[in-house]
Amino acid sequence: MQNDSLSRDATLTVGLMSGTSLDGVDAVLMRFSDEAAPELIAEAALPYPADVREAVLALQAVDSNELDRAARLGNTLAGLYAEAVAAVLAVAGVAREQVAAIGCHGQTIRHAPEKGYTLQIGNLACLAELSGIDVAGDFRSRDVAAGGHGAPLVPAFHDALFGHPLESRAIVNVGGIANLTRLAPGEAVIGFDTGPGNMLMDAWTRRHLGQAFDADGAWAASGTPHAGLLAAMLAEPYFAAPPPKSTGRDLFDLPWLARHLAAFADIAPADVQATLLELTVASIAEALGRHTPGVAAVCVCGGGARNGRLMQRLAECLPHARLELTDALGLPSQQVEAAAFAWLAWRLLRRDSGNLPEVTGAAGLRVLGALYPR
Figure 1 (cartoon, rainbow, N blue to C red):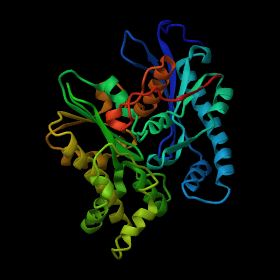
Figure 2 (figure 1 turned 90 degrees about the horizontal axis):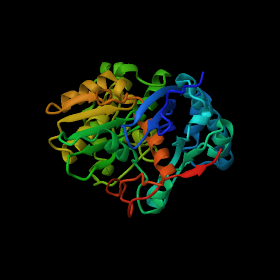
Figure 3 (figure 1 turned 180 degrees about the vertical axis):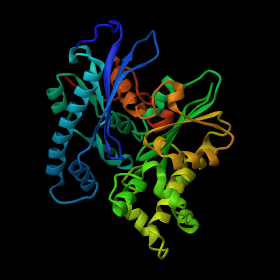
Figure 4 (figure 1 turned 60 degrees about the vertical axis):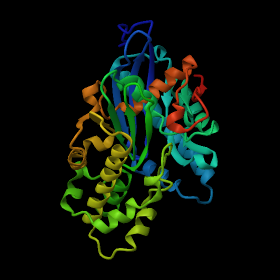
């Protein structure tokens, strides 16, 4: 049944996010207007099949015939994205004709802004064909072309949605990679990738337990962090580098972990997992301490918000700030990134800028993305 109660002076967009955790596609239906705050209308999630997850992982490594494999995987992802769009519209009771655009992040395969490119796949032309809705995507490339990192892009959305005239806040997204945004009244927004979020913990869990992730951080909680391994990993130059900066699986992958493990003999797998959790927590806490001193609230979103052990350790490492989920600010923690790409689609339709040069390092404000008409 079509939902006719939606205001005709508002714009509806769907946001799709499939991040470095490779757990699936998050879809949200958002309403934007100049007169009211952004509104989450509906949400849906579609898990990645195991073969799709493995195909994405395989494309992280340079190999023969990878162009063909990437193109075919892009077609598969377009089909999954179209399913996610159909699901969220069904939840909302909204017809596709009511939706102005889909904002699709795509699946990151390479992120190399220092070489002048970032690559997300998903065959957006195919998604437009399958969904019957205009598709906005490739949001990062214009920022990279302007000398920026093309990431993180979510701080601009965080500022629009979560900024407060009196309270200083930090938004911490713990996805595959973790990033933070500082929102301080009267000051420029600061945002950057802090380092690994769930990515290394998920990979280690798959290797040793055959599970997609460490549910609630229970396995990590059963182990003891290894001080030497943690110190060695934290010595990675990325952590000390000043922003603007961004990172991904191109740096923090299992081979990176293996190189550090080679210097330490016989660390139990559970202890490695505990150390990886501490790496995520310590790198976030250090970045917050250095770049967001005195913030009143640290608001967490992303898959890591569901990791009880990680949230416990963050609270212990941030005793002087109020730790809460973005749910307390009006947007569920699992939907923030997808909502950000719905917002970026809305900005593209209006030809409004979507980046923050002080965050990405771009030469200036830019309209982000490319449009694939239905």
